[in-house]
Amino acid sequence: MTAILGISAFYHDSASALIVDGEIIAAAQEERFTRRKHDSSYPKNAINYVLAEGRLTLDQVEYAVFYDKPFLKFERLLETYVRNVPNGINSFCRAMPIWLREKLFLKPILLKELKSLAKGFVPGQLFFSEHHFSHAASAFYPSPFEEAVVLTIDGVGEWATTSVGIGRGNHLEIVKEIRFPHSIGLLYSSFTYYTGFRVNSGEYKLMGLAPYGEPKYKNLIFEKLVDLKADGSYCLDQSYFNYATGLTMTNEKFEELFGQPVRKPESELSQFHMDIAASIQAATEDIVMTMTTALSKEYDIPNLCMAGGVALNCVVNGKILKAKSFKDLWIQPAAGDAGGAIGSALGLWYSELNKPRAINPVDSMKGAYLGPAFNQKSIEQDLIGCGARFETVSYQDLLEQTAQALSEGKAVGWFQGRMEFGPRALGNRSILGNPKSETMQKTLNLKIKYRESFRPFAPSVLREDLSDWFELNYDSPYMLLVDEVKRNKQYQLTMEETSLFGIEKLNTKRSEIPAVTHVDYSARIQTVHKKTNPMYFDLICKFREKTGCPVLVNTSFNVRGEPIVCDPEDAFRCFMGTEIDMLVIGNCILKKDEQEQALISNYNDKYTLD
Image (cartoon, rainbow, N blue to C red):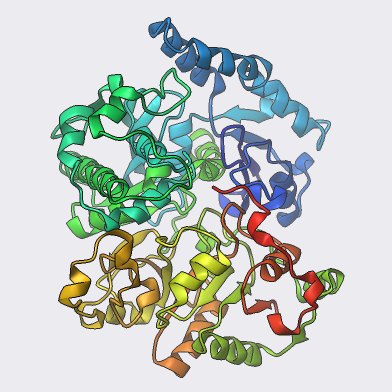
């Protein structure tokens, strides 16, 4: 037996993963344990969890792998500052202390932490993987493909911002890359910053805002900011940006180009901001589509794997699939930095140790259900400790009561099985609702999630019923593909509704399932499969029996600014701090009106807004 510990840390979304003989045993983000969203600290809690899940101590682990090479990243920082002297002196003075104190000397820091768990752990057991190789390995090795083109697009690793790899069997090689400061990820983040959202957090808000606008500025983006070539290579005009050496993403020249200053966070969103969002989304789609079309022609390989933060742009992913340049597509569900923990460990197993690769025809991610689970006894003990009032019921009664509550339009906290790895709740740490409700989107956004009203919700649909309700006919278990609601389920808008602009579009009923139908008739789809999540599958089947609809609203079990809940206490606190009507956790059912009123809290102010 060979056990490998993967570690991602110190930038954002720290995580750990455990691989045993090439099998992914466990993976989790540190934020779920510390309750600090995007926690970048050393993932002590995540490491303890994955070792416990594997029933191992660190003494039984042969290797640990860090997902990044800090010396190469430091080289990039120094070279960038030197090249731009005297610009960037303030940024340099802020960055250097933490690099000289911590990040430059990660090896001794990591060794110290690992030795605290295993005194015999030696330097020869610690490896470092390049950032983009970790991403690429996380995408290719768990995929169902023997051979694939592997595309990684993010902000920046050490130097690479976009890279192409070729995977065959157990071999993966990075064959080309685009380097900092030219970055599609940083371009998108610049517009995230410009529209008043938080970088490395609010990019998905920008994507959700885009359908409310028109891409009026797309041509301007290509005329002034991005030089895109036919082969998908590109460069950015750095005179408009400040991220290379400054403390902001954009500069005054960027503001002059678009005619307005940076939006203040939490201020009102105007039609201008919606048009900006639509424009950068359309430009990103054009860039990535150009890239994938060219890669398909160049390598003549039918399969594409993707990772990196840009791979979480599910609108782009849906268009790649529809274009059919590649026959099949697989995207790492933890496509951001957290997934590097898995990729670095798998990369060592296959590429360095040269172990044979067993390919799962679905994939090797186990549905991304790689986090902690809690047995019925511990759930009941935790709930009693919280002062909760609950009823323990049979499996069938649980499904019956939950489906009935959902059919009545109630919001249900659903906590079952192992926690998901990655940014999406996939039916184990979810808040569920009735997609046929005309008020569910507004209720979930404003009264439960405490977030912006424009944010769309995803549908979970039985795979067998997918093509009856959506134009998509392809597995999407990780909620990473967008497609339209089926045409015969859509409603034609009136002339008055068609003339609406911006957020006014939100309240128009567009389909039979309005709670999951975005203003452009699209939906971010999760297909639910009995083999990977039998309980969630059974619940949707029961809901279908009652309503004729095999779809549920699925959003992550948390409020804005909070990580997804991890344990029963987290779930109960969120339940009591929001207007969730019912909590179903293990075989326990909790109803809000039966709880001790003194336990109700003001959850809205508990977490820093993202």
